[in-house]
Length: 584
Image 1: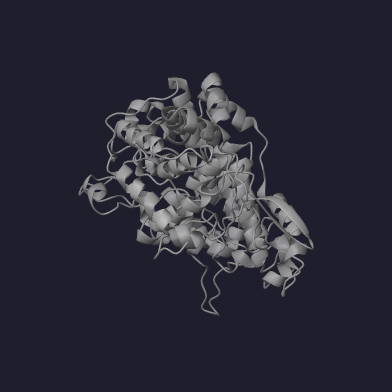
Image 2: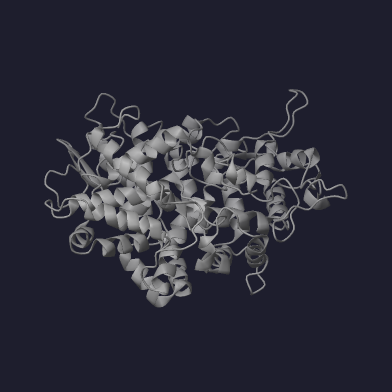
């Protein structure tokens, strides 16, 4: 849809949306109660811990409780992306190869990039291991790899396998995860550790310091020394105490030398030589290119000279994973991605304590950390949702996964004389429209910074608002336009709903929505429909003013189409409202 000229029908719907906005505010002194307290808590948990609640899961979690549900989710088998990508890519390939540029493998392939994003959407929307997948998505914004980098984009199997590293380790050991991330060729290509060579005085070359810097700043300890509750430690003059300096960067850069593709037969082994296996399998050491000199790491730990690349790397990983900053640094990230942008120091401290000791003497147990994030009183206490400082702006991708999960979207299909592929979830160009796409961050600093403060009231109140960094006039209007496209004419019962993609490289399709329950309520009991959607989409946090506007709007709409317009209009009004936009 053209942002510059909305259709008259959309303008009318937007006028109703703006009327709704007048009833809303960031502060929420009261909420329109719906469902039981257990159901409301279940809906909020599922909003924080999955890609979106469903009515069935709300009822189930309301019955068994959050702790039991987390136990079940942590025991569920992992849904992996690489194998699914290979299968989906090969299913699309015959249809694509009727075009002008046939191909045979996922190397420098636009089709394969489409397929990887399709698989991410499908997994987010349909996979049973929702908690694992949601945590992996959060970790992908901590350990950032981006296929906007040409080396990572050589084969999309590489970022897919990297994502599987996060999926598999989501409830595992932090040290293991940090080591696996460090040795993955996607990370090696992205930040320069792969084929990072020891200094050569004759050539006047030094080791690449990129990964050494980012593994400290972004993947483990941050820039400043932290107290256990995440507050910054300062010197006598009140200045933050740095965690590392140039000497430590140089030492870690020397540690991270001598690693190459797993299938390398020589040091100068290029992408074509490595092929797909080299971009998936963990890097291997080539000792002739490793710096064997002594090194001094963080907090004065000394590595003796004469050690192997593997020994140095393992010591460096231990040095990082055991640093006292890791617990509060990671705790704040996970809380911001799952629950709220402005956790209290006490909340961070409780989660960091779980990182330091899972209750059985083990450090770095991510299952204990995730459990602490989600079961903390600041995550579960509904009274906190009334605070203006509580919650977070929903990430763009999560607004759509919430919609398609809540209304059981079956996805789209593509077909030509070469065959037909069903069950595709295709929303490809979200990076251009909404400034976010899976594993496609613009830099190693992710889509937004954890300490970003939106100018104005948020900054004046001293609050953080990471996701607001990618909210601007363009992305806001695109969000409304795309929510309109995803909501209207999507009723699976409506005649003429076209759920076919225009071709294998179509960027977006009509995924369809099962609105039978909503249409019935729209005709029989408009207030009950609003209460149903309040629980399903907003965890019962809708304000009374918003509820009143929606009920009045519903009753003014026609009924001749069996409730479809009522259901679709109401759904669009909620999805485009600021109260839905802010997860509480």
